[in-house]
Image (cartoon, rainbow over all chains, first blue to last red; front, side, top):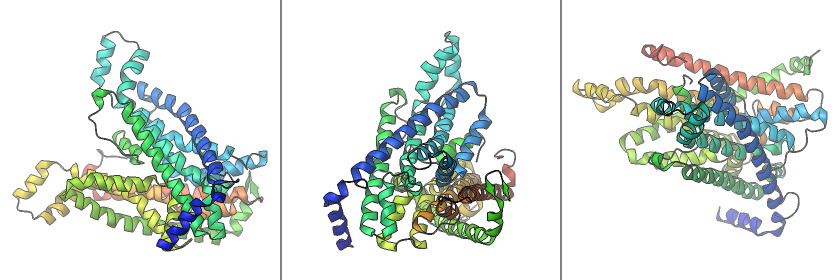
Length: 247
Length: 222
């Protein structure tokens, strides 16, 4: 085992590991920009949807459906489908199918948390705001969103972690990312490369979790700050779901 | 024969193989869920008696959950080998722990204090209290966790195709990405069957929950 870890250290020290198409920098950058674009798209689609449903209270069934579908469709299946459907258009190989699949994967936690976050805002506060003469847009922007922000951002964090983690699978459809290094390692049976690349991927995922956790805490209004830290978890969706009549 | 983009002949010709993959998929899922339930039950009972362990245990299982599946398979290979069932199962079990443990703990915590007091007053021992009072009352929340874990695991098993196992992932990736007329058919078959299995597992566990907790019907419906 010690010997093996020595070999892994030697792999990290090898300049070849840090250069070329399948070197760490190229694949890491690819991993990051694909994840970033996908997360931005997921937020752009999911957030308005979740806020609209949460604010009006209409369309709760849609949230339940989105959450259930998001959980049941395997991420690898989404990738495979996006790849094979784009293949006839000459777009199968490359980043596009990965970005589409990751965006689709990232939307459900954002929608569900935005919805649940707004619904959990004390109705009396909304009534008070209305009594003060605030219009619907003001209530949403100055009361509901600030109070719901930790929950909303928890959804973005869940989504970000899932996207960064799942981007690894892009290697299976020729989409590159850090998963490519692991994938090559598996194909040639190189345990050192597999292990070394997996360490980088794991560090990236956990780093994403920590970074978005910090963002979430920083964005929490001081008045709400004594609430306990909620770790990223799928059941952020599930548990919240329980409250809106879901599994 | 083809229906739209789906090559029905390919499905018919490969029915045995597809059936075998469904069985493999269920088998990999079943082992992971079985072991995951046992470990989580142990962790939940530990937390019940020593609440201080909640943070560290949830933190650890949460960290495991944040590691991408392909990376976790990869990190395990020096210990358990490339593409072995053991490698796949250790990772799959790891992913069930967060959801199962957390729901078990929350389920037990949600038991009304009066119910526990009443059981104590009736002279129940700690074990009797757990089995006859706390567990039945916690069951809806525990089973909600089991449903989420089962659905998640069924999805994750597809990823084991990347390390040479597969279940339905074999259809999605290994066959699906080949440039043949049947590529789309294979991928679609894999995805549809995986979603179908997840839906069936979810509904079956829901039915189990209703059968086991008839008193909660109507209240905890769906």
